[in-house]
Amino acid sequence: MRQYVAETIGTFSLVFCGTGAIIINDVTNGTISHLGIAVTFGLIVMAMIYAFGNISGAHINPAVTIAFSCTRLFERKKVLGYITAQLMGGMIASLVLHFLFQDHPNLGTTTPVGDWHQTFILEIILTYLLMLVILFVSQNKSVNQFTGLAVGATVLLEALFAGPITGASMNPVRSIAPAIISGNTAELWIYIIAPIVGAVLASWTWKMMQEDR
Image (tube, rainbow, N blue to C red; front, side, top):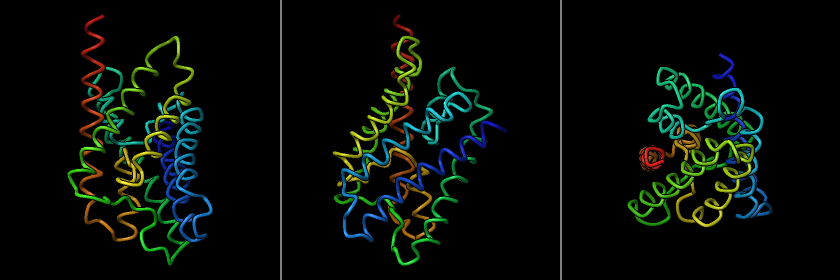
């Protein structure tokens, strides 16, 4: 139960701070800026990893949980509980933001700027790279104390350059929660499928490289 509570709080914090930064940037005419939004996402991910990493692993992302379940690092019987906790945290965050900013049209929903296949491929690659960092840093005893810093920096980097095109979701719940609460679900499938595909591919890459050692 401690693990599920940690995942709920961690995912709430991610969605609340990350999409909250987008909303506040909109209602204050860009005072936070794109850079500020990217930094917010990176910092909250880093903070949650250091806060809850020793309790639940601080997945705060269904794609990460599914990818870990494809390795021997995470018990598959916990997958449903983790994803349920993550969805709960994300939905509560978007509900709170909807209450606070009732006139905002999308609550920070991720939507493709260009063609759907452009965003789909980019989200696969972004999540693949993020999951590689998570696995190779967190499972390396010589550097795993820097996991929060490395993962947060990767989120910041990818949000910085890909955010204007895809929204740089890399996390199904980050997209599901604001989309459902705001009613903007037309392209939601992209942000569910692509991150899961990218994360699973990264887990296979990690396993292959471990076998070669």
